[in-house]
Image 1 (cartoon, rainbow, N blue to C red):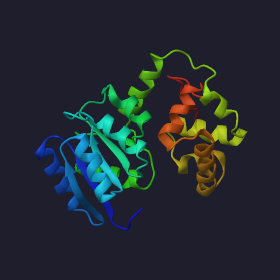
Image 2 (image 1 turned 120 degrees about the horizontal axis):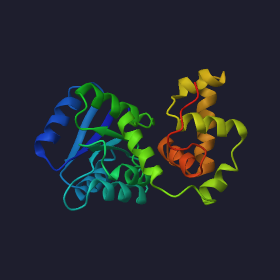
Image 3 (image 1 turned 135 degrees about the vertical axis):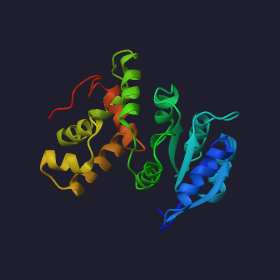
Image 4 (image 1 turned 30 degrees about the horizontal axis):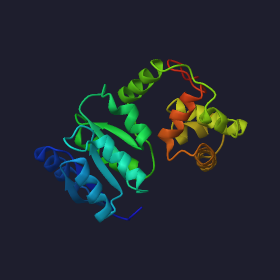
Length: 226
């Protein structure tokens, strides 16, 4: 990751882009390198400027944010997609996670939340607001019960401790919380998580959570143990 975080803002409303630019440009260590008013422009801007993060509105005319996210990851881009949505019930939430979005942020979030979100996603953390997480779980309640697909097979390759860590991640706990619960260091948790991602073929924490749900390791509505 660059010393200065480079950001592309993709939204079809000029006033929204201007607002985001003003907020981010006022922060030290963040530079807005380009703006885009649709998904096609966002993909082109990312190819030209190689940003660390792209703020991607999901609902844009032409190529929308979902298609753009898919295109970026199909092209092997390393940019982290922070998806922007107006509603926490957006039907694109699950699909965007599958496409490779690193996190979601509601457009109604306060300015300091936007800045924190950009920094978190750039650092490799997955950002899912509680309301977004509920939406993700609701999606799974409408899906058939998990079967013996490739995801289930991949979980068989995990060690008992890695399964334990993945379950904690799927319950929404941070590395620090997991370390405290399992009586290990945060560094050890990160090592386990890296191995989990490699074995599952997952790009990031969000996709690992999806794998945990799809394989039945965690069930929708299941309460996290205290």
